[in-house]
Amino acid sequence: MSAYAPSALMGAVAMASFVAMLFFLHYWRQTSDGFFLLFAAAFGVDAVARAILALWRLPEDTEPLVYLARLVTFSLIIAAIALKNRRPQGGRRPEPRKTE
Image (tube, rainbow, N blue to C red; front, side, top):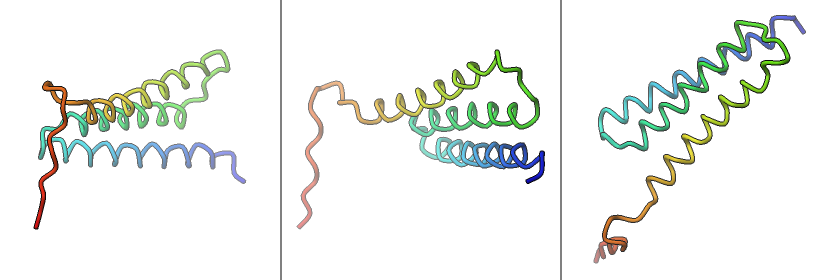
């Protein structure tokens, strides 16, 4: 395997995360739902972190910073899901509509 293969694969994953970010931004602009905005931010952080890993050889003492970026990414995803599933101000979820 070539010495550049891991960097090329990391660049491809960074590009995929960037494309996912663009899709979520598109859906956020259509719906104004914060869920999509938080997912776009998570994929943006992931894209930047993976692009940095693909472009630069980081010293071993900065390796924990990579995990910090992943912690931010996954925290944003968890926050988006939690905010989407929280109960409304009244404390009760609305009753589902019955179709006949």
